[in-house]
Length: 141
Picture 1 (tube, rainbow, N blue to C red):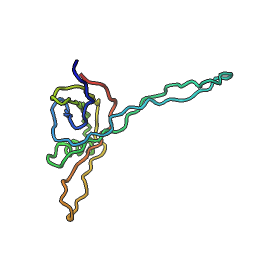
Picture 2: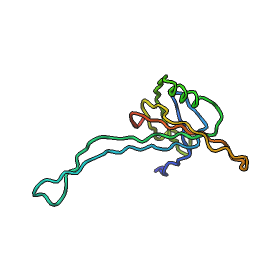
Picture 3: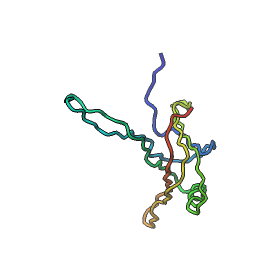
Picture 4: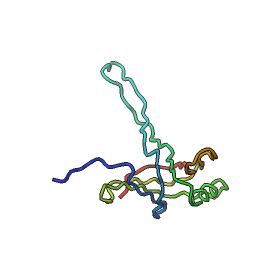
């Protein structure tokens, strides 16, 4: 029987519109929350009903060292009113480099672009981050 170790968070690929975009150091915000309301029924004291109201998704944050201007151009186009929603896939790999799990972010649109602080006293890499609002997070094939 083969051993199944938990997947490691640093083995991932990120695709934007089907094109693998390498060099991302971090992806944050892979979550989904089902919101609910509590409803108490008269005479029932053991529990309260949980009624589902909606599903919400936080922004996805992509981070990488500042190299290319592709993310900047996409964010700038949206800021200029040229809305370009894109599909993003995050593919998690195992130790052998095989795809094990994937998420698809649907209709992503940049809502914030930022660069790390510029500091003449430090020798750190300038990082850029892009926050993406989206319409949903699904498991991808």
